[in-house]
View 1 (spheres, rainbow over the protein chains, first blue to last red):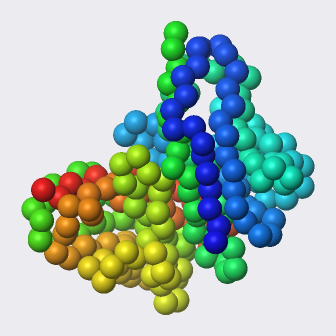
View 2 (view 1 turned 45 degrees about the vertical axis):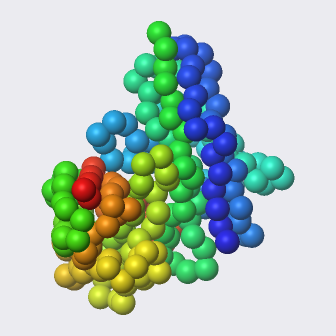
Length: 115
Length: 115
């Protein structure tokens, strides 16, 4: 069965520092992978997605993620974190075997940014 | 244009009562998804609607949960005889078409508290 693991429940970084949020997936075929961000009181917003092709994908708000098949990983990175990036981040994989596209989510990583 | 809206934003109910949660998808979006987000957990898929096709109910946790959607418009999620473990944020998402290639746009959610 497909699954997504986000090993870090909570990460704190200093403003201006670099960020990497980890995501590992379990899926037999080429996965469709997503990163979402959830700010307090807000719905989820799509940051970026990977379907195929270039393994380094660029997203909104200066985020990028790299798909590494050999490591079953899709880690999210940002070179310089801003205070407004404090939020919860979810990695997700699209369910295969059909065309529904419903997503399987990791448990999320909460990001705190200290001044 | 307007995003996905959900109502109510918060609902407190007594154990054993029935509740109805509403989702208004983005106009023109044919696919609609319901997810549940328990405290400290990722999102769990509940049910999926696509046009007039039979919904995919594979994620519903028990027969106390049901959902309806009229055509490509509003959807309601009903929980009968609520239990404390039903306390969660219920999120609705819509997409232009089904499948992992189409971005899911999420509403702000309904926070359900069962006392």
